[in-house]
Image 1 (cartoon, rainbow, N blue to C red):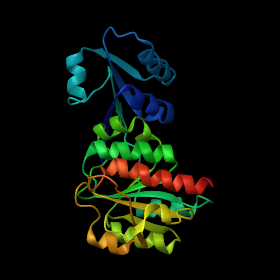
Image 2 (tube, one colour; image 1 turned 90 degrees about the vertical axis):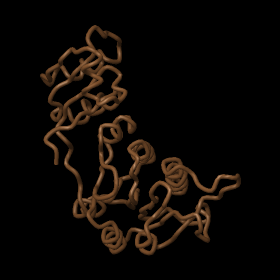
Image 3 (cartoon, rainbow, N blue to C red; image 1 turned 90 degrees about the horizontal axis):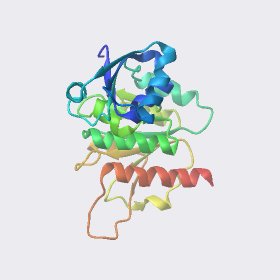
Image 4 (tube, helix red, strand yellow; image 1 turned 180 degrees about the horizontal axis):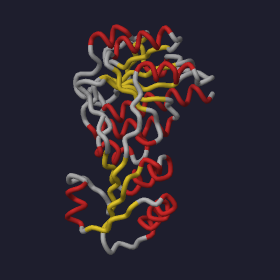
Length: 247
């Protein structure tokens, strides 16, 4: 794991200062900028003795590697990454039905960031992704997630199918999404311990992942398009589960 990461964007940096201030090594802020949102970030950093370095826009652009930094970049120690064992311990210790999001090979950082943001809003307990052939918590992901990457547990596992089998043994019902599924999303009970599995962009779930699911569901598609973007579909499925679980 890298010794440090860079987080940029006002919301993402504010969230890490609120949740993990001890992890922030330094802040680089745009010289001469004195607006209220940036001042709030400086006020959060001050009690923790965090070094603040005013720099020009060009240096901030370079630090954010071309990302939209909104005038602030933070150097941080990375949060501990969860693995399969940590995930199972988390599920076991919840004291209520688990609510998990499994992403089978999402490679677009914007999609992962959007999924994290939606999962956080929906009350998901952990987002799980394979370690290989999938995007991790990059600076772009953290920016798009708008702080959710600092608040929601994220697990990267070596063998996704083995992890799903372990979750099933722990009493978690694994529901995957597939366009050819016989059952529509709205006809399936999503109220118990649940892992929602979403496939990758374009290809959907891998065959072994699909075969490991307890149930496959599809989203009704009334128009001419055949499928939704994975982050949009994730929002639809998670909030149907939220609706059912709040009844």
